[in-house]
Image 1: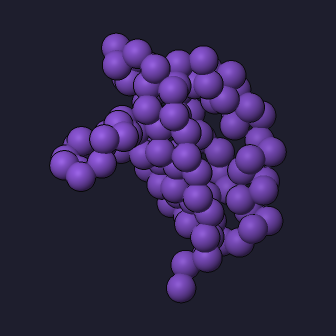
Image 2: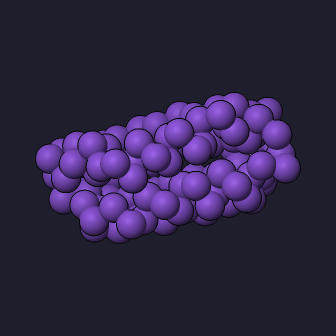
Length: 96
């Protein structure tokens, strides 16, 4: 199992909902075993970094993750979200 986690912050806080809607397009891609998008509670008093949204997905293996990233919906999501975001940090790791 591969876990895929991506953190996003909006360049303009007014665009957080538009970014969330764009990221929700990704749930239509059939290669994930689990997919969700959540708004961050902004409750970390230690970090000065702002994370508005988190994408969490699980994939059977690296082949499924690669197929997800190759899907045309993924490309369309990037085209919509990239101009609106400030920060994007992604991590993929094997569940263990």
